[in-house]
Amino acid sequence: MTRELTCIVCPRGCSLKAELTADGKIESVEGFACPRGKQYAIDECTHPMRTVTSTVRATNGDPVPVKTSKTIPKELIFDCMKEINAATVTLPTHIGDVVIPNFRDTGADVIVTAERG
Image (cartoon, rainbow, N blue to C red; front, side, top):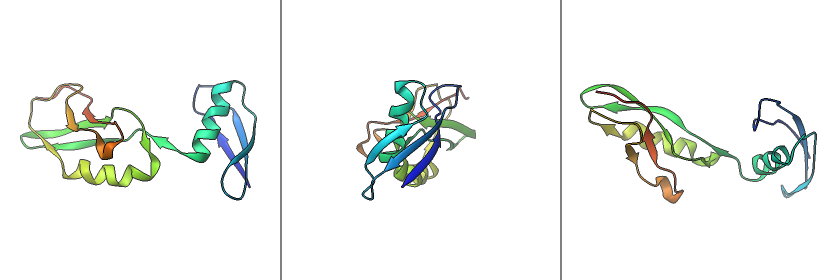
């Protein structure tokens, strides 16, 4: 099976083609201009990761922007959003405040990304 991707590691945006076996293992990667592009294709095809960004409710003001402190497995995005939607913070908040610590043992905290209150 062939999977076509656009590398997002740098602004160049290389067009990548990854050949996968029937069980999802990488056979080859083409189209990358640097080793980071090859690694991006391998990671994206075998274990895609994402940074989640959203807002969390504040009990005493406007919603507060948050994000995961590092990438999490793509399959956990909806679970992360459920926890974010259930969470609340009290103003004032500061950049880096932890709203949800160590989400699902991934090592990623959900943190505040703006000063509020």
